[in-house]
Image (cartoon, rainbow, N blue to C red; front, top):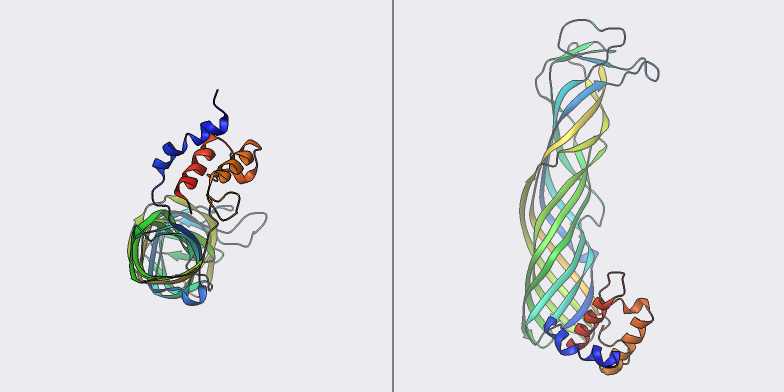
Length: 350
């Protein structure tokens, strides 16, 4: 029977077919002080559900009670829901700092660049506030404590600004592109992949998530390599819009509504709504400056600076001992897939 090591080494030619121009890998960090998003953001949300007074017989007997329709009295304990729609729209300019990181792979000989794991906090310098309008469109209803009537027509509420608490971009597919030498150590590049835009806004004090939105990740600029370090500068033009129908319940929140007939008082209501449609638009520029250092070479398993059969033997010893360093594919499980993953790295070299 062939020794186990000989059997595994015999897999090297087969495993090498899965390795294509691995190149040098760099772990990169986005420089917050030199990176940011400038442009305009639009957000609109349409909801439907019910409103009801905040009255309860025990906990809040002096609270507001509600009832559909404009006429008639209230029973001694009547507090009934009223159908309502609520819309939120905001539009304004953004000028934010960006932080995060990604992995950069350069295959200079083949003229290829690849970006993986791109993860950027677009509000790294803190949240933003944007002018907003809120409109409420209830069925006609009346209230008690205070006594008032509301005709079923849309009402605009003066809310001023709404805060954007989170805005992030996370890569969902590799960005692969061309690398062109300008001069030794200095290159231009362009790479395209896919990402997802997520975020959160606070509407009347209630956080509302922006549903994940597909986003093209198209980075282009220049790369400078000095020794084991790399500097990347990029400017991406952004022009993205999306409409989604999440059908997502929003946690109940209070809404104080000025009385209409007669005016001068305030009705205290509770809103139970479902987020039906969300529209987002983002137009502007995402500028990035990132620096990186050469990542440790997976093929040089014993860390002696050379890639040879001693690295294979060192890996197999770790793998047989179920040492965590042998989890070559990073899935948290040590099995034969780690052997193939390591051999792919080893056959590609450093």
